[in-house]
Length: 222
Image (cartoon, helix red, strand yellow):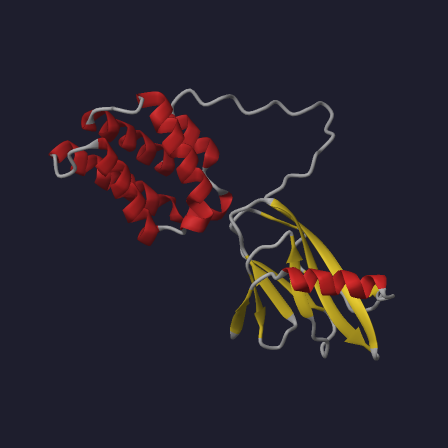
């Protein structure tokens, strides 16, 4: 499927709201938007019009990058930011303008009311525990590649090929660019670096950092 990249523009929203105020109907039509009501952060979501001959102008609120295929019947998006996203399609059915909406809870867990209330996950005691608890669901197929990044950096620190801790952090940032989807793993990697600095301080030795990198690799692969 050939797709073209689209970007949110304020003018689109103004146009949509203006047409609504001018008497457009909201989703009271046999044509609907189909797609996932919930998704994990980084997951690719596809939304499509149900009518075989329907086409639309699309946008998303709050604004984020998205794609629309050349037929103008399908919208695709993925983002590292969690939130309640409203997909909007402006179309015309039987010479009548219509605005369709669909809400996706993206990376947002609905508030349950279980009986009894669930027991919260225990706070991680080690970097390894933190890693196990925070691997993003959308990145499970890439954990072994990320583990390799930390194993390779640990070995280089131990051999002296990498001589400073900041160079060790930089090696991880560089290697992850090609081995994993950084849009899926971005929040995890930022949180993990904060955990490392909190545990080791700002000036750990290369040997200390290498040992921590091996704990991370172990947490990813177990």
